[in-house]
Image (cartoon, rainbow, N blue to C red):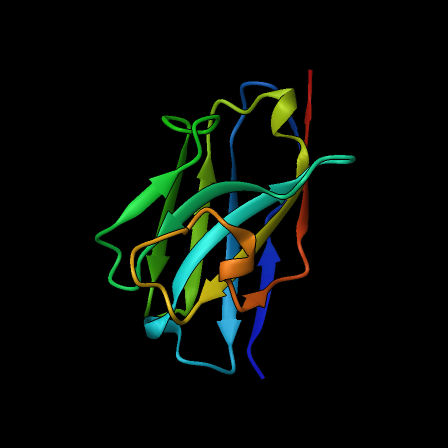
Length: 126
């Protein structure tokens, strides 16, 4: 069974930084495209960042572009989300997700991903 576990969430002041990690077990990490999504109360799940299985393709949501960076370490079966210049509107539960079937479309759509972590809370104070 494929399992994704996010860590690194917490409380941070506006303008600060946080690094999220997601460890994937029970599958073939190097075969997965990976994404980060977030969901704030009373909002739909929002695309944050994407990285291809090789790491040579990345995409970001408009609201985080220039502030967040996604990366992966295949030797550690881990995908990261470095978050800088955090804003209160970044407050949400952050989820990592794995897509074994990515072919170049709809990386920003949650239903395209087969496996999801439990989420980690990020709270940014003003």
